[in-house]
Length: 467
Image (cartoon, rainbow, N blue to C red; front, side):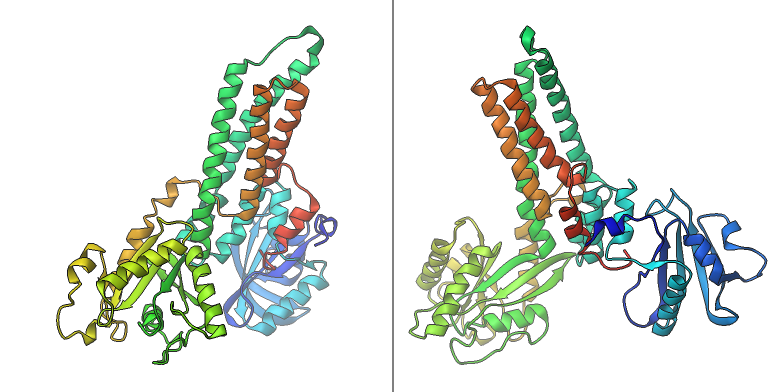
C-alpha cells in the first residue's frame, strides 16, 4: 500500500455496504470537496436548497441526476469536519441496492472529482487526523469481522479506547521516569541524582507486572477471537464423527462402520451463548500398521495439545472401567498441559440393555451419558463446555487479542527487564536511558505514537474498501 498516495488531501469515494444487490446501499465520500461534489449531483425534494447550504449532521431526501436524467431517489447525510468519522467533510448517500445504481453513482462521483478509495482509507484518514489511535483503528476491522458476542465485546472495548488508555498510562509513567534519568545526564558532571532509585525500582516493578498481565491475557484473547478449540478424541467407531455432526446439527463428518474412516482432523465452529467453539474431530486412537492412518493419529495428538478442552468419547457398551482410566491417563501423558480439561463422554446409551458395571466410576469422573446417533443429551455437552471455560465479564477486563500488540508488549517487557538489571548492576544512566527509550518505542508502536510505513500499510491493507 502506497501511504504517500493515501495521505494526499483529495476526496475519496467508495461503496461501504457489502457487494451485490440489496434493499439499499450506502456510498461514502470524504475529503475537502465531498459536499461540493455531492451537491453537483443532488437535488433536494423542494429543489430550492443546495446541499452546501444545509446544516451538517442532517439527512436530506432528494434525487440524483446525470445531467437531466434521473438516476435514483436517495437520502444524503452530511458531516462537516472535524465532527465526522475521518475528521474531514463526509457525505453518505443511501440509494437503492441495485448493482447498476451503485456503479453508476460511483462513476458520477469520480467524474465530478473524487477518486476511488483504497482498502481502509477512510479509517486511515481517521487515524492520521487524530480521531482514533492505531490500536483503535485495528479494532474497527476486528469489529467488522467479529462473529460472536465475545469477539464483538473485545473489539468494541478496544475501539472505545480501553486498551489504548492502559498503554498510554504505562507510557506516561515511563516518560516521567525517562525524564528524570535524562535530567541526571544533563548534570552528570555534578554527580546529582534527581530520581529516587528506590522509588524508580518500585515503579519499574509495577510497570513490568502490568505488562506481564496484559501479555498473559493474549492466550485467552486470541482463543476468544478465533474460537475455543475443542478436540473430540477416542478410539475408532465410538461415535466421534456422529457426535460432531450432532453438535453442528449437520452432516459435516463422514460416518462409517469401518474403523479408521477419519484420517485427518475435521474442524467446524458453532456459537454457544455468544461464544465460538471450534470443534475438531480427530482420527481414532489405536495401534495401526496403516501408514496414512498412523499419520492421522499423529496429528490427533497435535490437535489435542492445541485444544483447550478434550472430549474423550467411548462406547459405554464395550469399554471397561480399566480401559477408560488407561485411555484418559494416556491422553494426559501426551498433553503438554496435564491440567487441561478432559470431559469423558459415554456414547451409545441408546444401545444399553442394563446399567454398566463401571457406572459408579463413570459418575466419579463426571461422565456425560449421551446418544450421538439420537442426539440425546447433547445439550449436556454444551453446558459443560461453558462451565469449563468460565470466562468472567469481558467488559471489566483489558484483554490483548492482537498478535502485533502481544509482540510489542514482549519487546517492551524485555527492555524493562534490562533497565531493572541495569540498576541492579550499577550500569551508567546513559545506558539505562537507552533501554527505557526502547520500552517507550515498543509501547508507542501499539497506539501509533511510534510507527512506520510498513506497519501502517500492513494494517490498513486488511480493511475492506469503504471502511
